[in-house]
Image (cartoon, rainbow, N blue to C red; front, side, top):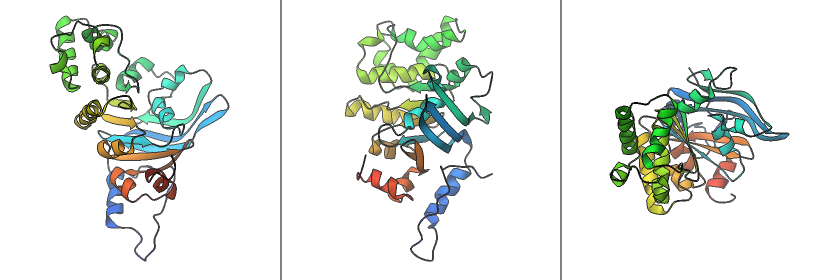
Length: 284
């Protein structure tokens, strides 16, 4: 079954009689045949009367990393927050169209938002550990969802910190304040906290923008490991980062999805001139 993976159907330029290269065809078939985890169809979002998203259509494959790129204010973070309905917390926001996860409309009447946000974890630009111990930060979500057994919680905390590549650094101080960790460690703790409730999707909004190069490298390596078990969507202003960590990339401009495709293809042979201008630094 063919899946919609772009805002509109765009034919590649054809300076010769050969219409498409084999590489371009393979890239598009590759996306179309993958299992789709998140499907965004005709989504328009308003902040009051201001239209922030314009008819967005994008299919996000399961167990891959999809990067959203584009200049500030282009709508990429707005769309990201729509995938776990974080925008519901803002007064005056309205959305039309549909967003489905495994073919279930997350905006349908009666959707349990607590359960949705268990399935769809979120990591923000600024690390935001709770003013609690490292242990209690990771155990917080499982406790909210009814897990009280200490042995079970101990196992969850251990496995989550291991998955976030943080266990070796904190195993001897689990009951000290999370606020004493470095910025990079705090961000990995926030990732561990998100993983502790066993999500299916992990949303990351500029997760390394405030970190030093070494901490950024650790986060990128971690994303590379997590991609095998989770569907990851990352917003980033860093195009080199998008090229390093993502399988697919979507370029947004002024609330519209201009182009989406396999990352290597989009960065080396974009179909839209606007995409090419952005990734080559002609505007931003």
